[in-house]
Image (cartoon, rainbow, N blue to C red):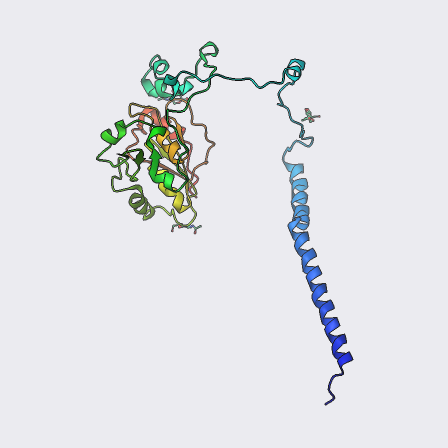
Length: 299
Ligand SMILES: *[C@@H]1O[C@H](CO)[C@@H](O)[C@H](O)[C@H]1NC(C)=O
Ligand SMILES: *[C@@H]1O[C@H](CO)[C@@H](O)[C@H](O)[C@H]1NC(C)=O
Ligand SMILES: *[C@@H]1O[C@H](CO)[C@@H](O)[C@H](O)[C@H]1NC(C)=O
């Protein structure tokens, strides 16, 4: 057994280094190639070309912008930004298309009066809606799920009206949201547990949900931690500003009602729709409300 000479060892380690460096380069290039999607892109392009012959895909797509604002000469010369004055303090909660006085001039049947009715051009306000006095930046999530600064939505009526149902409590300078709702005074989390025993919420089947008649949107707020994003809606009604609380909490919500106008969501936008005493007469109007509600791609 001859001892390998030192020269021999050096050659071998040089070769090893070359191999290692070579492999590194190879995999680097391979990775870069895959990331660029070159190979994949090719097959996708091929598919599109193939399917192009079958469906009528417009061949000459225009990628130019078609709705850029017109820059008039006047604007260029006078490039000062337009300044709006604040509106009067009474407009703090002004929601132009949900104005109570205008609403009352519309028919009550099918909740038409609670739908969006926007001001005519000459009725529009041209001022900035002021924040409520003392408004502060809302708490960051997840604290905002449970607490909203009182000054941001200073309305206590729900704390009295919905006291038994545990929607919202007034605690000095904050509102606390214990997570309760009309149907779930014990809290939304327990309620969602019950739902989850019959609906596969945990395994990714339900990713999006719609909450009808959402109140302060605790249902949606608590679904978030289960990887379900919920859109909640409620009309602007006699309990002040339900949706306003939801928004202050950082939960997606809109003022909305099921009436004669379809909600602005595409079909199958939601995997699940939820109503717990949402006061929607589902069976009425030849089931138009059900049709209206979009929904359901539960496969
Ligand atoms: C594409 O071509 C068709 C037929 O020549 C024409 O009618 C259409 O306006 C074109 N579309 C665009 C975006 O140029
Ligand atoms: C989730 O669970 C439901 C009910 O058990 C089942 O039908 C469905 O296939 C599951 N989905 C996934 C993605 O595992
Ligand atoms: C249901 O909606 C359709 C279309 O909007 C309307 O023509 C019909 O009258 C509605 N049915 C009822 C019972 O309101």
